[in-house]
Image (cartoon, rainbow, N blue to C red; front, side, top):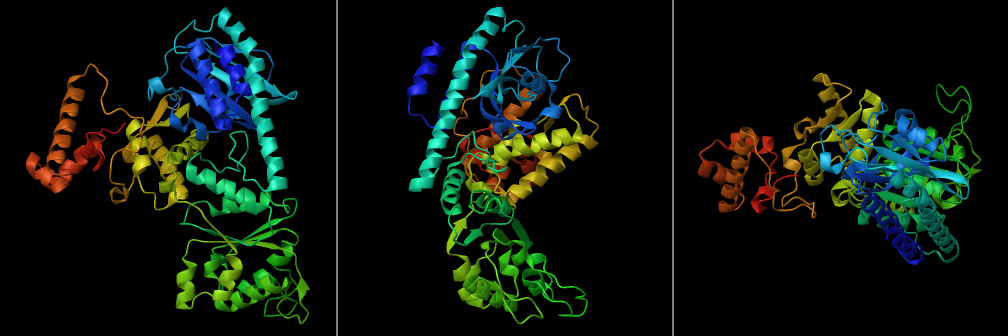
Length: 521
């Protein structure tokens, strides 16, 4: 019985994410429904912390209360709220149920109940059924009875997070990532990002300068904000300086300030960014772009804790923590004389490498879900989701522009499909071709989705799908015989190589994955 499992889990020492995932999975089994979601209330939106039965990008989505009247209705009362199949309110999970990916949902019933912890609103649990009548009176009474156990699971998970926070404060034990905590829009559950957040939790409370290293588009500013938010300076200002945007003639004045009449146009005295960040944090983004003359003065500030305004003789004391970031290889710049070695060592007391998106496993789908929901709301669509082959392409693409490139790809594809005249009340699915991904940036090897089955389920084909399936198998067979060489496979099949690539893309095949006989899901 589900009651005994939930009670046993309350007493067990489980990872926080596992405890909540077991909870929603047990609820889905108990109620024999299509999907269950546990959602955390954060300001004006709900964030999924555990789901079962929804597409993989659902955990990255944020459901704004103003955009989803069903969720708003559930949170507005403490009693169970039900929506029958004839409800006119849009369902937030339209197009997101795994078993009906990309199709309009059939008529179905929904129910949900708001959750409270310590008599404060925490969030909600929602259940969706794909058949009418699943949530009868008995099922509704059952969910009411389980609500106390659900809230107890959340309470235990939150208590464990508080205990770990105390250990961090007293013993400096690293925190584990919690699905209940707000990471300041840092979306991800991969081992790489989880380990990074643990590292930042530890270094944030120190006064050490931190150097954030990573490729363009990985989100260095978000990590700098997290460092500041978790530091003892959190109540003081965080001042952001884009060093790449500072003209060389004004860089010194911007950072350190100037006196009245210090140079032509200096009509009044002006404090610099260091003084603006007094007792707080100064974030020097793209620090590798600073001119050498300014680097020397920055070094003196880091060494002595003093700034000297242009045109003034007396230095001023400042109490500022510096976080710097760069996508450049500063060691190479030091070797080439473009960056001071002594400043590099001052800034990199604690270097932190931010992993590129291609090293974050399926985080790309969570981030895609975030951007899909933002564009859905922006464009006024009922539902916006990815086609299965588009999901596969996102996982296998190398993302040279990282998270920023992913955001732009999703936004661009959403605008393109709108230009085709789609109905805003339909479930809109983004095909892979609209993502405009560079074919040279795909990873070799099979689809990284280890849960995908090599064997396709038995289906009844139309003539068109039967022809396409036959074409897929021919291409796969030719590539296996030719060791994955596309040019040789084209000769084997007696087709032009460029036409073979076009056909493979249309059929949802990845250039190197077909070698294993896997079809993109």
